Length: 293
Ligand SMILES: Nc1ncnc2c1ncn2[C@@H]1O[C@H](COP(=O)(O)OP(=O)(O)OP(=O)(O)O)[C@@H](O)[C@H]1O
Ligand SMILES: [Mg+2]
Image (cartoon, rainbow, N blue to C red; front, side, top):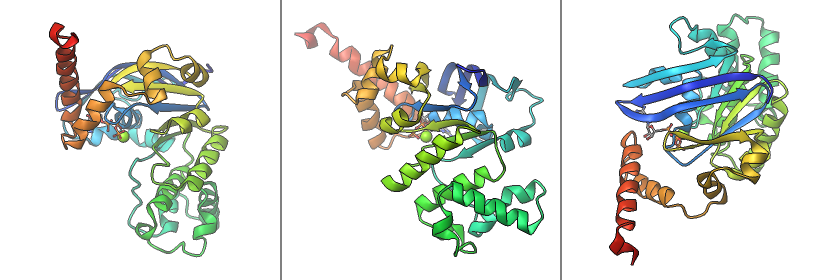
């Protein structure tokens, strides 16, 4: 592995006292794509939001441990959160364009950072929309409100908006979940190109996407790090049975229980706790001598 861009050490995150991430330690290398995989509720978004400190906006959250970005602990009291967020762009699971035009969405960050020249702004907006695969579609609608775009277009616009402030690290939370196969493929191709210049961390539920894109893979389950390593090793020879089961999509009791619980609507933040309790209860039941026959 080349030198670590992000070094996570003993990271714990609690929401109202419930553990969402448990003692996570891993290194994310420079200018590679690291994919975070794992079932719903396992803590993928929490991990991304910890890396750019957006987690600070969650009520009742408590974070411990260290996250070193280029050697600086960004969880420390002296961390400069504004410059951190310029350095680390986050494309959210739910696209959240600003309630303004397409052009202004992309120009927003550069303007805040002092870009005033109209030609320079025009060039930046065009480059970023091209990179996000939106220019041809929207070049005649730059003044349209971004909220009128389709969800897939909004997701690509959010990518363009992140790129406009020239971040060094791109965190992408399921960036293609709302896209059709062709648009997904475009975004995947863009991310594969962008890794020449950016360190990319992508959360995806799509194992095939992770296989196509990732250089490194992180597998989380119920807030714990199950396995981490080079993608070819994790995908071809996973060390952990749970990783093999997740990759193969084989019926895995925990996943089944987790999804049943989610379906019952017992979500955030207790689904994590309910999933664990239900799993433990079911395992105890199944392993009673009478149940084994
Ligand atoms: N703001 C919050 N307040 C309380 N609990 C939260 C909050 N955000 C997340 N959680 C809980 O923390 C756990 C991890 O959530 P997280 O969103 O990180 O999961 P995820 O792996 O991204 O899931 P998904 O694949 O569904 O997006 C879940 O049990 C969730 O309900
Ligand atoms: Mg998520």
